Image 1 (cartoon, rainbow, N blue to C red):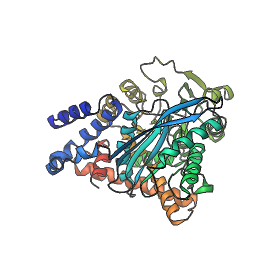
Image 2: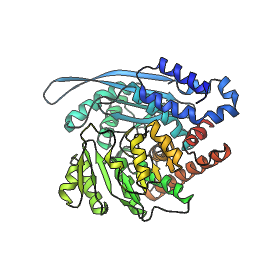
Image 3: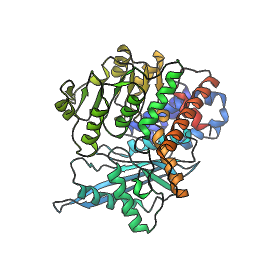
Image 4: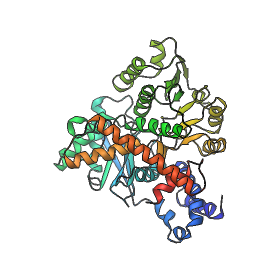
Length: 442
């Protein structure tokens, strides 16, 4: 680590205390750009990095709402408008008890680079609340979303800031948010993406992040003249990204043997086929149940609960070829990364945002595996959000085949740009630096 990076990170941490995830995201980026900064000292003199790490705007607000018992509840809402250099702020809303300023700043920071990589004119932002939709009734979720949007609507718009979904914010929540926006503003515009098809949504949007991650992994495998056909794959999570990552892997001939949620994970040595995946979609999207129920229905599967005291995740200690972390940030630590390598995994496609810790990433890089960091590998979701914005602006609906083809082309372009930039800077195996480099060059 150079003296410049050490000084920069020391100042950043002093200026932004108690924001560990933000520190981690920035350090990953600035270290990956050391070669660029050496070759282009004008970037340092123009304070490009100092500008990029500072949000253009940080919005925090209270969200009071009434639960089904008639009790007033109060949550905290956020919107981090990070960078609008190439277009309106674009990024998801996350509803989860863990949401705080540091997590959202890290997500917004990552979003800037991810959006730039798509080549679509979108800036970066992120938002959400510490509200937990889990265990809440539809009526309670609706009341919270309406209160949340009553404040958020002042700060967003189709040409200003276009939020989408994230953890805890799916089609139900987007529908409630969009309805309240339309009610208050008296306008029908593309202010949110991930909407239902009935009010301006795009085909393939729910599938896009998972599909895009698998397309990116396929591009990495092509550099070794391989495909996903016959590959054994580990997938974490069981939400939107994990579901459609699994679906696309099956379509391309791979075999998925794991899924998880916050309580534990299932290992199905025979593989999760289309019928089993349909059960998971119904379990998680309709009944909102727990992944343990999978093992109750399919006796060949083994369910392992998480105790909360593990120093590593047993899901990542299973023999496989590919890993697709699709749950949340920092779910793969250094022990997990070494376990993956020891068990034969040589392809990692990050479906979640920053799912690997700093030390875990270093192990992947040292071992020279095919590693697709989230800024590149999971850009498919926001890419199709950009396509949804385009359809909204033109009042058009593209077919699923057309959107999927555009998504595939975008992921191919991202991978090609990454490889080209890595070659240009003499680091052909270090995919980590490439998304940041390519995005910053815009």
